[in-house]
Length: 92
Image (tube, rainbow, N blue to C red):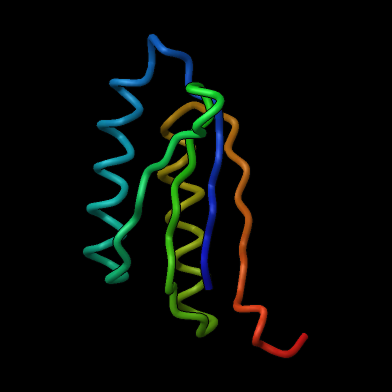
């Protein structure tokens, strides 16, 4: 399962958000073995996205991962949109 979390960050908060996201990435990697990536829209320097690829899909691990994203993401003080994607090769 792949997670894409996007949100807007004002220029004056970018440094603080960057540090918080790096802490979140460290926590996710330690607990789930998933390395997050932080991206910014090419045409909009205020839109950022966290990418988490290869999250295990078993029920308990997935629920724990989502709870961590929600809890730690709330600390950023931003409105975040979380989207989940699976391979198009997986039957619907």
